[in-house]
Image (cartoon, rainbow, N blue to C red; front, side):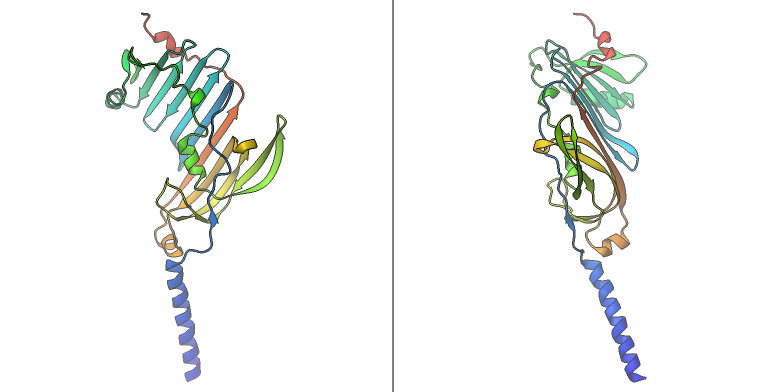
Length: 263
């Protein structure tokens, strides 16, 4: 009997030790690393980017460049404010700012260095332009980096595996899929060293030189670095990333440009 109790005691101690170790130890983790490299796009193009958090809109950017006409447009939308920037063929830039309230519009106009040329009735919106002494001809999206910094930062916090390849318009394209499990993070965009990723799905298409063509990825992250944090805190959220670049340019000139007063 005494031996049984000793063995049982050892077993209980080992279980307790295992639980205690799990509280502080992170299992082997896949390293997060974006398969794509940020860079400029050439010629005429449209690039659509969006980030959802727990199914709710967090950020979106729609960029259109017509290289032949010299027209450019970038619509950048956050939770409570949207900036619709338009560059005419002569390089002149106008911006329509649309917000969720009168106070938010006042705040957005105060944050901007542009001058108001017209406030729109029936909506919390205004059209602005840079001051006369500011040259805005060269600050358009033809020089933007794709994907957007926010989208790129999310990609750098995911572990991917190349699962397939294809050819698009004669260009070899790699297909990468997000991985579930513990993910080691080495990124200036977060102070976390690891996260637990679950329910990962979707894929990322990457062309020559690391150019991102397409992404549609959804996954759940748990803000934990050990099994103990994972079991106890359960601070989790679902993120969806969407990106697509096309070599077309349509609807560059927005309808609201007709509301700009003639000089």
